[in-house]
Image (cartoon, rainbow over all chains, first blue to last red; front, side, top):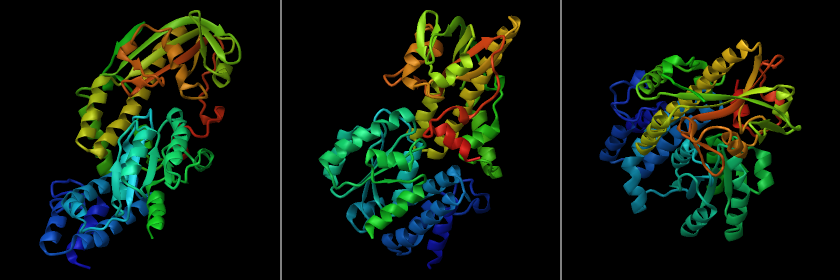
Length: 222
Length: 228
């Protein structure tokens, strides 16, 4: 593999967003994901190859390490931030169509709930696996989801909740979304949610960690 | 209502609880992350001044689900009422990390600095919990003067006490205690606020207990603890 791409993979995996980033200490002063992506593009590496050979494998490693308890949420957030820094350089190629995404993923925090950290983490991990992500924000109504689905046919939908009180809103919202768009796959996540709740309210998939949703989505795309 | 304006150094902030909130379970974070937590705590100490307040009331259990305080019924539920049985005095409290803390979270969110937001959020949870321990200590001092002991603190949203009952708890307190307001669902603003009740009496059971007294399997607190 191209040396730049190897370094980019390492930078994202270890959470080195840019040259100024103090972490990880062993890469202090070295180029981070931002500079390495710019260098790779300048060296003529295609945006698609940057995504598929460096960014996606890096985030895949991060997700697996998290699932195996080898890293924890803060490290994952650092990697996601490094991924985001690289993506700032690739965004124009998504817009132009030069980079093909695996599909569209619509995510939000359920109506009544204002917590967004878990939702943002999932959004970053999914984007890092090659999907186009539409983040509807927090306190999202069923109507807002339905509108986004209409604008993005075939998109997969995700709902997050932190509180037992707000997770209770998920069931009605899923009913409304499924009534408007029966084929839409709906994923739920968040600290109080579990698989039996997922089945009870008619959601299609639950995962306790971001890697689970990434793997589910990639199966949908293949 | 007795009100306290506090600094972070007034509180016994437990770094292990912060690490737990950050998702480390029984693992110790790597030194750079411990450093980040310490730096964030230092930064927060420059503008985060928690507030705590409580009022003591006479009261009693009316039935298995309801506690009567100040002529008002609060549906605390049967899980908690077991621990309030035969008690005659209750401390109703609120604590908050304060609005500047919320503003800081908002600022980090606007800057898309997810890592700092998560660190601050996790520390804010422990700041609020530490403020509860502080106010619990103050109530215990008052209880001792009457020869009473105190129970653990119980809060809406936990141990089967529905968070929507927050309204009835706040109805026995002055308007906007410590600047805290409730939304329609009973959630408090500022975000990092905790309300609750502590029972007082000659035989109040202060034995620490965990999630085993509550059957709510979907509670996020239970999930955090099971990571240990």
